[in-house]
Length: 111
Image (spheres, rainbow, N blue to C red):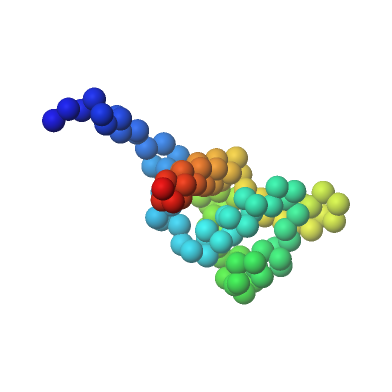
């Protein structure tokens, strides 16, 4: 078999090795995607609850879980002082890599 036509396999990113997308529940992904889209960091916890379609008590459980995995953190809103959830650098990197990889797959699927 001629291997010259096949690119070498890329090694999985250490980030994906530590937090593979398959280990994140749908509700957690809803939360992470909402926070990723919120570049201004202005989504309140109440708004996030509505966006993820979960009760506040359920959201709080998910926020604690995501914070324990160093994907999100809490911060005070710069104008209102209200608590908001934001992605950590690690969380943003995970989502950036994931969305970039799936974007490439979606483009290839249309050909």
